[in-house]
Amino acid sequence: MEDSILTSMAFRFADAVRTSARDMLDREPVLEVEDLREGSFFPRHRLVVMLHFTGAAQGDFVLSLSEETALDLMGIPSNVRQGLSNHLVGTECAGILKELLNAASGTAILGLEEHFGRLTMHPPILIHGEIDPPGVPSSTVELRLESGTLECIFVLDLADNEQERIIRQGMDDLRRARTETRLCRHLLADLLWHTRSDLPESLRLQAETALEGFESTSDSAVVSAT
Image 1 (cartoon, rainbow, N blue to C red):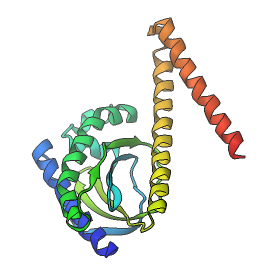
Image 2 (image 1 turned 30 degrees about the vertical axis):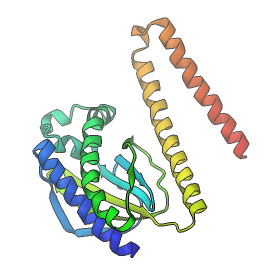
Image 3 (image 1 turned 120 degrees about the vertical axis):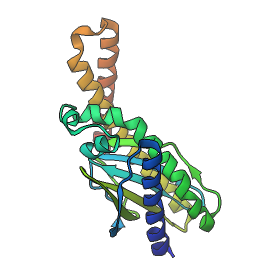
Image 4 (image 1 turned 90 degrees about the vertical axis):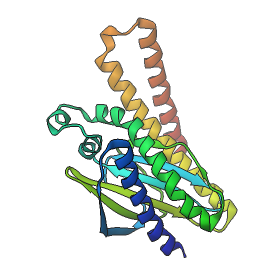
């Protein structure tokens, strides 16, 4: 049952993404039917947008794409794309990619609720960089644009034991929090370094204190783990 749901939902999700991209962005990626992949969840690209759902089943709707493909999806010309840094791409694309994922997931999840009843969708998050994915089953269908591929990944966890499900969800939440915290730390450090001379002294000190607090907390966690 799980394998058939993974396959059917991956195609349903990819088609919803294609339709949403057409309606929202006036871009219609090509559905690569022969590119279905199944296995443990592992996105191939640096930009990853995830929407988690919970209920009788839990899992994620995921978009994975490169910075170049994200800008192409939004119709930004190639000569403009080359001048944008990766951090700026992530910032500029975040809102639009989250809206796209929200719309597509809202359509696709109706098919999943036919099997599991009412499911709750959580707010999407965007991860730009490294990701520590959980080892849960997934199915991936690719959409193709001129600049590259957009991975549409459906992740499903059918752990039968309720305690196991809660523990898995807690582990996933910790992974997400760690990834987002690492991203925020790098972004704050970069901004602080590049705008140091233009910041009010009080704000600069608050930012440095926040970074120092993160460093000390991370060091304590390492010591505790050892």
